[in-house]
Length: 577
Image (cartoon, rainbow, N blue to C red; front, side):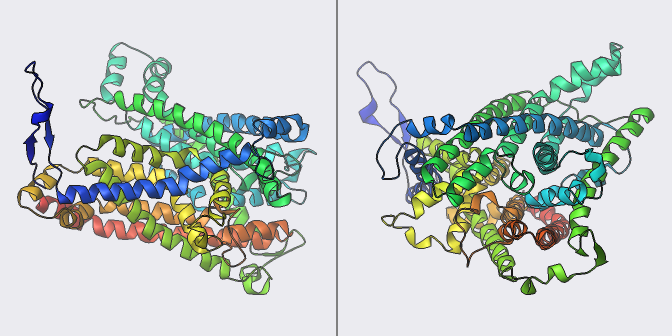
């Protein structure tokens, strides 16, 4: 697109104030703006309007009459319900503290020491990402339940309740914290440590005056993310919570058990509030973290410290045993005939067709959901990010779209799913035809995980030199051709990362789709949850492990393809440059 400008004579004033110069918007620019408008409409339909209807439902009675704060007053007047709110905060705060401490030292060990197998342990920390959140709950039952391997460790206590929820949530949230803190610790400046050494500061003083201040915003960001994940998680408390109710299980009981949608909306807003606050605090700390990065920074190269390296290796090994123990116990529980009385190994629990659990249909539904979400979600996200980044001017609309794109990150899956009932199930909604189909699950999943993918795409596009578009415009090359022949190939690694992120999360998601699936669109993770409710925990473990193996296979293929593609991609970028 050629940058054509026109003199705006109407803006010239009699006091000789210089007239404004405005760009003339061409046909391609108008087309891009129209595309941005369509994206804004899509995000409004899939996230903004449903949340507004959730808010409206919370202040109405069963007949749709406005009752103000009466529903909230009724909620907090019920001791059983209000106790769930306190339980959620207790679990989230304690789980966040434990996870943050373990993740920090784990990340420190793999980034700041010279211990062996750091790459292996870094990859191992990401294993929980491949499993639905209900799987650690199932594994903990086998490990510490009434018939568990280590039931004596409980000393007469029960794994069902806050203890089991906290352990399961630590497993679930651990990789998210490690990823964030590892990034924060990796941004250290070697010169600061050299200055500390020159001033004869000891290791402890250096840690508290250099290491912690340098990564404090990353640690704070990880804390907010962990808190939100634990506060809104449904899978772990549903499987191992027992009679210890939290908000996530309360909203499920109100909507599915009692069909009390007004009270469900109230609990949904209570789930949403801490998530929004955590999200806002996380955005503030992220901006401050970025402002601390200097272009003159020298990457830190850790030096061997035998005693520290050995201690960190022992610690990391213990965490690895915990992670592998939970996953291994779930795998073992899926291949024993009848726990704990008949430990004969068998694969009969994987024969879903003979178990009366809808056969393999839920798996194929999950696979279709994952593939379609990865394909269409990646296309929508990357194209939308391109429009947000590359359109000239139109600042208000771009900011509004970016704000809408950030909204899903602060919206718990249960809240999003419930809001979809209020919006898409309405007979007056022109999009009502997608309700009770696989399409609504695809739309829901794309929206639920939209923000992380959007930020990934925007980051990749910011690294692309603006001269590509300028040269193409000067040669009168259409925008769409530059996009397909230059932008997409250069950003292909990020596009593949977005696709694999969508695929894995679509395979493992539970909370966002628990309210909107039907008998014909039941997913494998949902089927595992229902199967465990029916008392067949072995088959539930088998379903969970099927999801893990599928995600691991796809991630392996992605890594293999990435290695093959990397050399060609770098050569291509060199030739383009």
